[in-house]
Image (cartoon, rainbow, N blue to C red; front, side, top):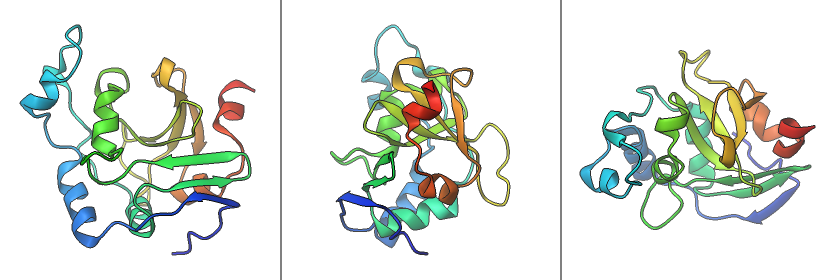
Length: 171
């Protein structure tokens, strides 16, 4: 797949290895560990938190092989992708726990941000269509499906778009 269509490349790193992708596929949605639960704020009870028991889109996993933690721009659209692993990097699982997605957007999985506090979110509340989930955006300060907006139906549609998330959310 060709991921070379971005207008701006702010930082291009190494792609994720096969082992990194396989580890992500097996661990991103596992039950929260005791350590993860202990690290959460005391006023939220993570005992009933869970991640969608669905498969991540293949197009997204292919992109991670191209660059694991990419920072790109396309027109006015900016991407800061989370990495596969939570080893001191900005990992997908760690970011979803830190932003408390299982509490506020059960069925949503944030995979990137836009540099302005807005998330790119796989909407996994329903089964995938042709291996893809609708992709939503919402502000970190207002995590809810009610306040989110549709960005696109496929991963590549979202990558190829040029409109900023702020424009989608607030114009």
